Amino acid sequence: MALFIQPGLTAQKSLQPKKYPITNDYIINQRVLGLGVNGKVLECVHRASGEKRALKVLKDNPKSRREVDLHWRTCSHLNIVNLKDVYEGVFLGHKSLLVVMECMEGGELFDRIQRKRHGFTEREAAEIMRSICLAINHLHNMNIVHRDIKPENLLYTNDTDAGILKLTDFGFAKEVKGTLQTPCYTPYYVAPEVLGPETYDLSCDLWSIGVITYILLCGYPPFYSTGGAPISPGMKKRIRQGQYTFPDAEWANVSSEAKDLIKQLLKTDPAQRLKIGEVLQHPWIASYQKVPQTPLVSVSVLQDEKEVWHDVQEEMSHALATMRVDDKVTKIKTMSDAKNSLLEKRRAKKKEK
Ligand code: I85
Image (cartoon, rainbow, N blue to C red; front, side):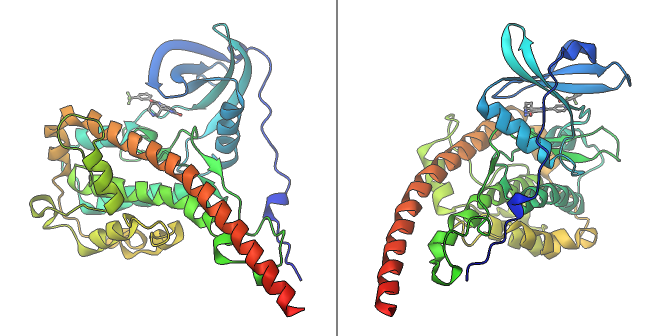
């Protein structure tokens, strides 16, 4: 008997963009808040409330529609940038999707850390990582993978101590088929690789969490290229082989729990990497309030290395892009694997009869 568990079937209200001019509801300012790969982000003001908000201008195409749809379905979480309104129509001569978000006035995560003058502790780092993990957990529970978790996409609501860290930009996010959603076979005969690639898909977000944790704790990334080029063959090799260290100068006083978490996240074999649920249960995250308040050197490293921060961000973006491409290649491989195993199972079934 096949088990049909289909959580995907629960009716989901998909987003209907408004078709009237955005200018009825918003005053659009010239101030550019950010430049994304897919569109720019402008400041705007909600006429009815006087609230400042952020407007992301996207080309209206299926990819952008997917971005907005995934963001819309997930943005009720405290650690995901809230979506307020979406409009469709012609904007500056182009068919556009106009995405209005809450305005994150605290800016990017690492800019804020750089501005810290009263030191930055391991406990604060753990607290930051916990908010990021809560956002990812929300996405992964819905079988959505973000695939672009990097410093520029982590923004603070405001610049006070009460500021909340949130994840943004669903431009590379995708929904992965939940293993329970598509039972076109009886589970008794299912080969592990047929169930496989799903859990795999989500694991690239966990690698990103590992890299961000590492940078938070020491101020530089675990893998970096030597000499100019944004991503060198040597760096690629080190990423692939998981070659990184915890140099004593910055890491001597960092807790072994933190290092253990990083080691379990930067596993080269995605199957061995922790799942997001396991990260939330890891002592360094679960008991973040008990993490030692050891001062970290990351603030001064980030301040001293301001010129290379741009390169660090570029390297991470490039590495993420490579991972998304590799993901496609793996998919093709696993598909042929799956076909072979189905064949084997058919033979096995015949023998039984
Ligand atoms: N507010 N990646 C880097 C920004 N509020 N920003 C980026 N993709 C997005 C820009 C380029 C992220 O989807 C982005 C997206 C959305 C935002 C966004 C959303 C909501 C903001 C690309 C700000 C801001 C506002 C006031 C002040 C400040 C920043 O960016 C600052 F602190 F910098 F002064």
